[in-house]
Image 1 (tube, rainbow, N blue to C red):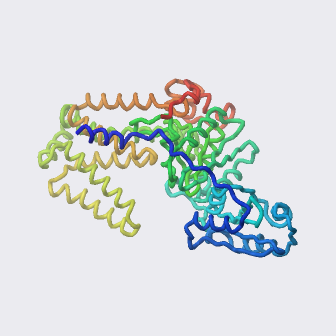
Image 2: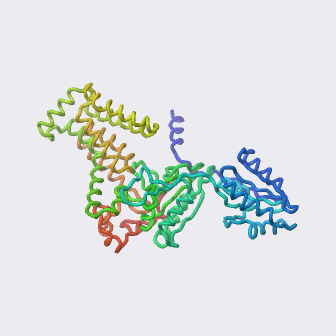
Image 3: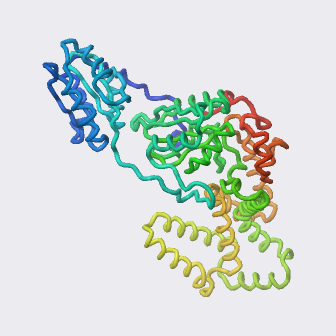
Length: 512
């Protein structure tokens, strides 16, 4: 039993020792040895292309991966110029001539290790190797297919740009450059993932972002001990200040380049990942979950109204089922007489307790939502129709579920979609408050709400309080939390994230 508990604990304990990386293999002067090593490194892959040639008596080779390059660019910008140039007998001078006089591109890098050869080839480059030279040249001729720019499906706005991020990292970088025409926009590229070698772009404004936060973010990404990075969620645990059981994340995510540009102007930092059509934003505050780009396109009074509507919808989504169960179970006198008679009749006609009904309804709804989300779109419509009939009219007529219980659960589910980025925390907390209200009534809901509130207030994002500027309180920043002030006020004294009240040094933030 002790061994089982220890094994279970070790399974969920993050490792602290990084796997040592092997020494990089240096490129030799023998072309045959270098080609043979590259073939063994790629296990003679079928899409590995090695084009050997004789250049005025000098042997050379152009190495690339099929379907990652543009064959027209390879033929007319690399191979054709190589054949039309007169080479000498000195291999090093030949390589310098190729770099400076022959190739019709400026994306050329001199490499000296086989690790760099592998990284560049798998990134859509071709590598030129010359007999007698201990260096190689990588030439950017990327030509892989990518999705065209379109409107994000999960981050829709009424007014504003209809462009969203795509999977190609350099395309996403160009969209930021088009919107932020300033030389202070920094786009630093690093790699993450021992196996995937995924390119990651750290975006920030050098004159607005905190240099301490930028250094801390780069340190955390460099310390990320992970093999592959296939989605944005892979890096979130390594970016957050510390591991916790909180359902709320201190790292924001968006699919819109205009939203990223707005955050950058406030001193934030964006992290874009190659192959992922979204960007991570740090530091991120709890109040930003209730802000959208439409808030800044509409009139201030309407933006303020919709923001209060979002706050109300969030609290209804997590509290309504639990409060309904608590009042019906322990405090029936809180209902008007006519409503109480309806609820009592519905509860008496069903075989389950009120808490059991509410949990079952929510559980079935989550199954329907997940099945409709994962299934093909034509089948998704059928699932929604069948699910509506099963949970709705059929379940009530069969006497399995009461109509008031179904109404409360449906209202909470609809409210949870008002803030899509908070759906996951809302779904978990909805179950928690339902159980607390069923067993302990309003007192259980109050205690659990205090626990959740304390958990939110205890979180930080790179040393910045997660609940700032509400707590610690700051007057200057509240103009864009509960009330959205006009643009003349917002632009007169812009807020910087590092100037939030209660902010501590990001270097002291714990990320263990």
